[in-house]
Length: 125
Ligand code: HEM
Ligand code: HEM
Image (cartoon, rainbow, N blue to C red; front, side, top):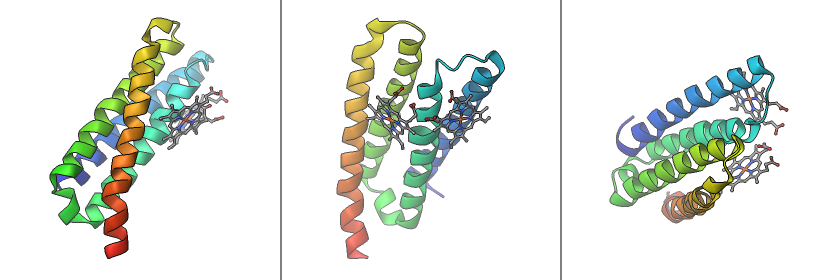
């Protein structure tokens, strides 16, 4: 695994370690207030990043293009902004909401970019 595929899989593993640590903390403390943060870290973080990693691994020529690098950084920065912002929000800080909102929209923009990158490649192959 190389390039964007390796970057996404590294990010996926970091998400899984953080998300599972949060899940354990929730279980041990019996305080599930951060459930949405845990759920999104695991599925929108670990699982989605792993799917992106395997896509770029299957299509290595696309993974080495500039647009794939843009997709990685847009998804990584917005995803971290979304999850850290959500954690801070659910810890009782409503002032962080604009960061969560902007990050969510940027995360969606990342998915749109992925559709633009992936669909032509899928239908060409
Ligand atoms: C160390 C392992 C894990 C622990 C201790 C843990 C713990 C928890 C806890 C305590 C909840 C809250 C349940 C509730 O309040 O109803 C939860 C929810 C959730 N977890 Fe985990 N979890 C772990 C791993 C995972 C993994 C590997 C995934 C997915 C890949 C995952 C996905 C989810 C999702 C999607 C929810 C929300 C479920 C719902 O909407 O009701 N978790 N987890
Ligand atoms: C633009 C990014 C996203 C936003 C703004 C968003 C927003 C939300 C909201 C508002 C909820 C309801 C939370 C609650 O009732 O407490 C939710 C739940 C959920 N979302 Fe997302 N979501 C996003 C992306 C995703 C993605 C990409 C996935 C999966 C790959 C996902 C999986 C889930 C799951 C499993 C739940 C149920 C667990 C929970 O209640 O936290 N979400 N999401």
